Image (cartoon, rainbow over all chains, first blue to last red; front, side, top):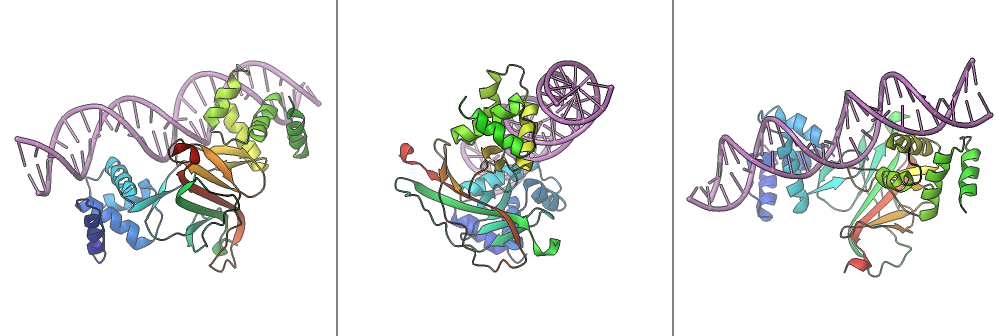
Length: 134
Length: 134
DNA sequence: ATTACTGCAAATACTTTGCATACCG
DNA sequence: CGGTATGCAAAGTATTTGCAGTAAT
C-alpha cells in the first residue's frame, strides 16, 4: 500500500487518470527498483488482478513512456525492460546470472563536437560478470 | 572488391573458413560503417546472392559475434543491429529519421566502486534529433 | 452519452531450431 | 568420404493492432 499514494500523485501530475492498473504498474516500477520485462510485470500483477491482459500492460507502459514516467531499456536485443523514470544512471548486466544492477556513472563525455545534435536521452549499458558469479 | 581481402584475412585470423557469404557479410559491415539489421543485410546481399537465406545471415552474425568480429547493438528493443568490431565508441540515434551515427566518447566514468565486477563491454546510446532533422 | 480504459484474438515481426541438401577439403 | 556450410520450413517469442465490451465522468 505504501507507495500507491506516490504513484497516484505522479499520475495526476501528468494528467493521467490513476486507474487501479496504472497505479499498480507504476508502483511496481517505483518500489522495487527493478527492470522488469512486460512478462514479469504481467506475471506478478495477474496473480492479484485476475483479468489483467498483457495488452493492457503494453498499453500502460507505452503511455508511461510517452509521459516520461517510465523508460524502456534496451538490455537484451529481443525484449524490452522498463524502469521508473529517475535521474541519469547506467546499468550493469551480468552475463552469467542475467541480473541487472543500477550504476552511478558520470554523464557521457563527448569527444565529438555535438553542435546541431539535440540530446534527449543517454543510456549506458555495461556487460560483464557480477561479484556473485565468480 | 577492395575490402574482400581484408575480410578474408580477418576470417582466417580467427580460424573461420572464408566462405563467399561470410566474406560478403563481413565486408559489408566493415566497409559501410553502418549498423544494419539482419533484414537490411539480407536485402542488400540477396540481390547478388539469390539463394541467400535469412537463416544464414543469422548464423553468420552469431558466428561473428562469438569470434568478436562483429558486435550486436541494442538500439531498438525489438531488433538487433550489427557492426564490425572496432574500438570503443558510442552511438547516436535520431528519433526523427532513425539514422544511427557513430560517436566518439570517453570511457564510462564510474561513480560506484566497481570492485568485484568484471567488465566485458560498455555500450553508450544517445538518443535525440540529428542536425538534418531540425 | 461520451470518452477513456481494458482485454481478447488475430496479425505482425524477429529470431531460433530441426532437419535436409549442397559444398569443400 | 566426412565434416562444414547453407537453406527451407516450422516453431518460438515479443509486440502491435482492430475491435468490442466495460467503466468512469
